[in-house]
Image 1 (cartoon, rainbow, N blue to C red):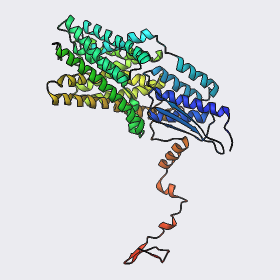
Image 2 (cartoon, one colour):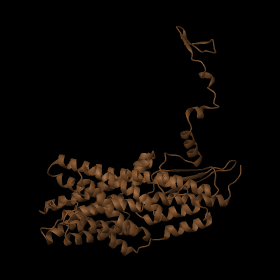
Image 3 (cartoon, rainbow, N blue to C red):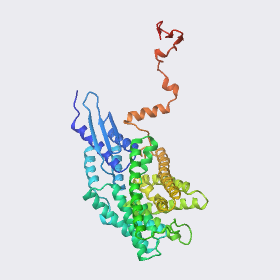
Image 4 (cartoon, rainbow, N blue to C red):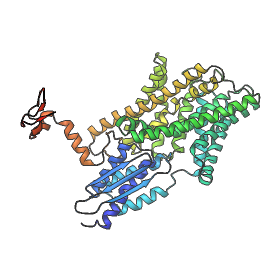
Length: 481
């Protein structure tokens, strides 16, 4: 049995590192496997299979008449970083186009892992506060509410970074801490101005935290059959959301025990096309760009995100104006965001999630979650109703964005056959390109074409006959009881 060469080992290592970086960047499972196998093919590796779970990525190289070589990468945490996701996909595209060899790719991977992003640490902290403040503006907050929201989000972002680096706290507890900080900011706003819309502070923080957990890849995996990774990612989002909900509810109970009532104001609604139209325009502009900077999105995408986010909100508000139900309006807006986001991704070579998630941020069910928490102490059925509304809205957003990406990717592949690494991939589970090609070939061919040249098994030629004494086979006189 032969030995594989060091060059082949280095190539397998490059394939494994690309897949691991894509997994840690929350790419879809079908996208990760397809891109990794295409990279392996262009590097000259045959007989390669790739497999992944929620936190592991494995590449196996099994050449004939040689020993196999397997590389396994474990993912500790996922980063909310669209810049890194874009760069690793661009590197994969360069390898697929045969413009980069495996030696240069290994150096490029080292740089991608070490590069912090185009924006400095404090710029990211500031824009995290601006993202939350823009969400508060969208719900009618005044200057005091905007200031308290900005400060609370800024403190949370700095504190989270410290707790993750130094204390290693699980994300669940960090989410609960975020809920407590949000309620504390609302209480301070009420103490300064009793007429302040403090509930907008809490809702804005909820929306900001939900943006970091938004992953269309989870729904992509669940829809296309990668259930293990899909269920794992959905469970992660649910657990983190529960942490946020518990923190907010705990803060509300503490405030009530102290005699402070965080009244749910009627102003807590999305501003519409009325005298306050400037609010939603400024809020959408700030929301999209601030979240893009916070997620380290490449600078070339910022002007398009600046325009795209208000347009998505206009689609949603226009549907509401003509009488469409809120959930369906949200779903249509999400389909629009996924479809146009895929086209913009093709134009700018920036990952599609950077456009889609920033565009649907104004549609996040922050107010429904807050209303459900507020109604817990007054009417359980009303609380359940608001909770179900929040769940349905979240599913409409995720499924709508996935549907839009599916339509956009199909249209782009019909126009440009070379567009491989940056477009979303929607395929059922497979482990090798040969397996995928055979499946596509079977799907294209008719039943008669697939049966051509195959002989019916001998033991199925003639059915056995039954007598009172038992079964008698057609080609055997032996009786079996």
